[in-house]
Length: 499
Image (cartoon, rainbow, N blue to C red):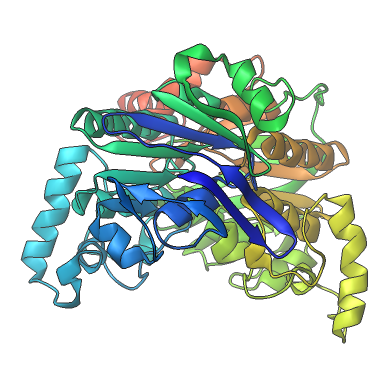
């Protein structure tokens, strides 16, 4: 790719960028949200076209930017946002991505193909259930399996580990190395500085311009990459809380004997001003816990209450009325409506009446957008135009501006660059220090260790803990792997119980 430029209105997404992907190498494409990484790869995949510059694939210059012909050349893009058909199973989604996908093979044949890919690459995905019932991590793994099934020679992975646990991310990077060793060219778009170390070469974009161009990874420290990416030296980790409450206030968020799917009779109390982190490997009941606590799904049994007032299941206005803010794990499915403008998204779920006319909504939205540093063309802009970090800040603006009593934060920094992640974490910590009870469901243990007053481990639908500061990282890690559950079963003669 040579001198590639792309504008969206007055926004310059790319400004004369050069980029190369080479057979047998993993190329890390690093940059903050909105730096132009995804736009560059969408052009390479034929999903967008440049305003200027040239693109060649295996020596063939691309004249018409369309996904079909470029995919036929061996280019496959795994996008950050899911493209699965939610009502179809894993095997059905898999065959739809193939050229013969219009004619589905028998279910047994399609299922065998999924099992073969799962065994080959070690990316576990359940088959036989609609994709909508898969966890976020499983959906991400299925997206990757679809690209691998197409036998791509140039594989573009847009934030492939953003929704994976540390163990799953490490396994995926191992798969990427094996694919590169077979002669494929891989491009990994990432915000995680640690993942760059598993790559061969690195390009860093900042505001659509190359801050580092096609450099050997070994030639840069993490500080070098962070400085190039966001202009400041940072380790790329969430800043730890500088103050901790010695004692939580009165119980605010109370969960009593909640059961839903994998979650069984779960109980938890969180006091005012307390941050409780929920650690665990994805798929141990996090999605069911989120659905039950947010009121999005009706629990099979149990009750969720804020300051003694129950939340009505399936009624988002009820949880807002009782003072529970909700930062969903998938901001695009459960938090925002992309085709609507920013001001309308800020009105979603309001307890107060919606402002009657668009000019009034635009005027009311501007101070909130400025306060939360949502970088956009204005309140009239479509929400789908926002980068991931700005979209997440829009969710926080809507949920926290009404001064909630409690916050349910589900993977709130997922897919964000270090600067945006630190901003989101700082705002949530500030909410706790103002008296909010915060339940933080997360995948990255370092993040939970930095922000939590108390950590509970969710394993197989059951909570184990509490773990208190100074945190024993090894003990929490063992609990996440099931050690605490095994010890509990042994102590109770085979029945699970508290450790």
